[in-house]
Length: 135
Length: 468
Image 1 (spheres, rainbow over the protein chains, first blue to last red):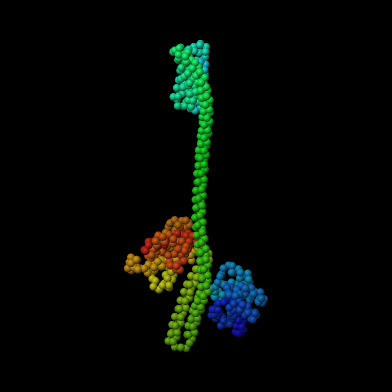
Image 2 (cartoon, each protein chain N blue to C red; image 1 turned 135 degrees about the vertical axis):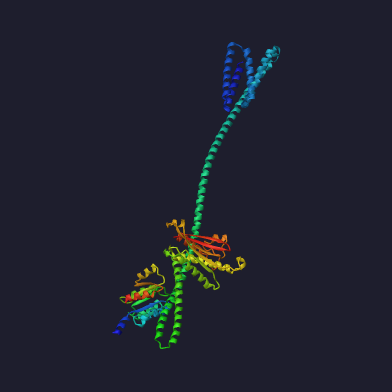
C-alpha cells in the first residue's frame, strides 16, 4: 500500500532547463525532502538543445518543464515552441522563468503557450505551492 | 506830360505788384492803390483844367520820390532795375523843365541836346524794362522753384516723420522679436541640456540595470544556498542528538554548528541587503516605477545614513566619523517615493562623509584645529509654511537638514553642484550625477525644495523641504 502510493507520487517528473549549472544543486537541495520521499523526480538540462534531446529520449516522462528564457543558443521561448508543437498530446506543462518580469516578456511567453510565468529570484515556497496544484 | 503820368502810374502799379508777390503788406498795398487813384484824378484834372505848368512839377517830384522811396525800402530791392530804367527819362524831364523855367536862353541852347537825349533815355528805359521783365520772370521762376523746394522739403519732412514712426514701430517689433528669439534660444538651450542630461541618464540607467541584472543572478544563489544551509544546519543539529556520543562531544559539535548557522544567517542577511540595493537600482532604472507611499522619513534618513557610512567603512577601514541624528519624533509619515528619496539621502550622506574624510586627510594646519573631529548631522523638523500650501496640505512641510563639518564649498563650486556631470571628486570617483539627480527627485518628483548653505573649509548643509 505504502509502495503503491509512493509509486503514484513519482509521476511528478520535472525537467529543469537553465544554463546556470548551480541550478541543479539548488533544486536538488531545495526539494531534497520531496526527492527523498520520491514525491518528485528532477532531471536537468543546461541548454534548450539538451532539453530537446532529453525529451526525445524520455518520451512522456516529464510532466513539467521549468525553463529559463535567457540562455545561450536556443532561447527558452524557442524551446517552448518546440515542446508545444512536437511533444505529445497533451504536451507537458511548461513554466517559464526569467529575470525580466516585464509585461512584454510575460505576453510573449503566454502567446507561445507557456502554462505559467515566474520571475527570478525564484520564490521556492511559491513554486512548491504551484507544483502541488498541478499534482 | 502824358508820358510822365503813365510812368508814375506804372511805377506805383509795379511797386504794388512787387510788394504783393514778394512781401504782402496790406497797409502799403492800400497806400499804393490810393496813390494810383490820386494819379489818375490828378492826370484827369490836368487834362481838363490845363494846369500843366503846376502839375508837371508834381509829376517830377512824385517820380523822384517814388524812385527814392523804392531805393530806400529793402523789400522793393527787386524794383531797382525798373527805377534805373525810368531814371534817365525822369531826370531828363526834370532838368529840361528846370532849365526852361530858369533860363530860356540856356534852354534854347541845349533843347536840341535834350531832344536827342530823350530817345536815348526812352531806349534805355525800354531795354532795361525788358531786362527787368526777364529778371522778374527769373525771380518768379526762382521763387516758384523755391516754393516747390519748400513744398518738397515739407513733404520730405512729413515723409521723414512718417518713416521715423515706421522705423520706431519696426524697431519695437524687432526688439520684441529679438526678445522672443532670445527667450526661445534659452528655452532651446535648456531643453538641449535636459535632453543631453536625459540621454546620459538613460544610458546610465541602462548600464545600472544591466549591472544590477548581472549581480542579481549570483546574488540569488548566495541567498538561496545560505537559506538552504540554515535549514541543513538545523537538520544537522537534530541528527546529532540521535548520535550516541558523549554529551560533552555533542555540546562541542552544537557550538560549532551554531556558529556555522550564525554565519549562514549573516551571509543571508547581507545577501538580502545587497538584494535590496540591487532591486533599488533596478527600480530606479525603470522609469517612474516608484510609487509614492507613506514613509517614515526619520527611519529612511537613518537607514541611508548607516548604509552610506558602512559603505565607506567597507572601502576604507581608517574612515571614521561621528553621526548625529536630531530627529523630530512627532513627524508623521509623509507621502514620498522611498527608493527615490533614499537615493537622495544616499547621495547627500556619501558626499558629506566624503567631504569630512578629505578634510581629515589634510594637514591639521589647514583645518585650523589640531584635533579635527568629522561630524555629519541629520536633522528633521516639521515646519509650517508656504510650500505645503502650494500642494494643498494645510501649509505643512518637513525639513531635512544634512550637515557636515567638512571642506565646504567655494562660491564657484556652489553655482555648479546641481549641474549634471559636475564633480569635485577625482576622475573615476564621482559621476557628477548624484546631486543633479537628487535635485530632480526633490523638486520635480516630490514638489519640494533643495537649498545649500556652506562656508568654505567649515561646513556644508543641504536643506530639503518636502511637502507633507
